[in-house]
Image 1 (cartoon, rainbow, N blue to C red):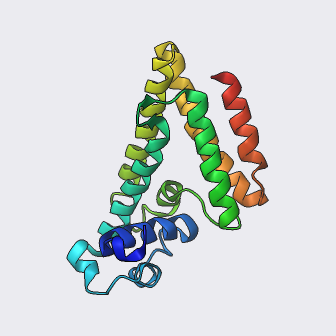
Image 2 (cartoon, rainbow, N blue to C red):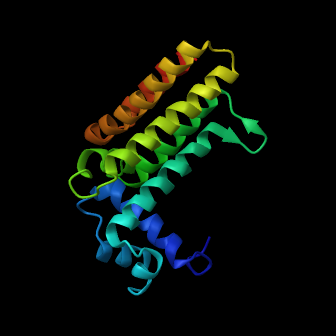
Length: 187
């Protein structure tokens, strides 16, 4: 979608997600979001009357919802291995395109957000728990017993998030590829 067809609110949310993922909470400023999004200054408090905190929390929730798409297709749920493959494809592309500078905005919210954003821990918990629950449901829909589906879902979310961090540190997709291969073997 071209910049002219996307609202200033959507551009600001997308920019806030991008800045959270690359700069963390401390580096996600109103000025930075405006510069990246090209949105007019007056639109900040029009769309986000709560200011920076509301913008960041909205962006974090949007990022969480966007990642949830990996658990479903238009015609129903994907296979658990396909969901893992889609995650890996997404992260490989994003990491390479950003020269391994982009990470998970929810991790950024978790690690550096609680001191600055009152709802940071709650939102991170909601998003991570939501991903775990969606993957648990996907595993259960493909025949995994409830307890096994729960533990595999927790393992998968934790391992992928950790793999993204290792990939950034090592400037290589190898940790992500290793984790996806191991998780795929389990499902």
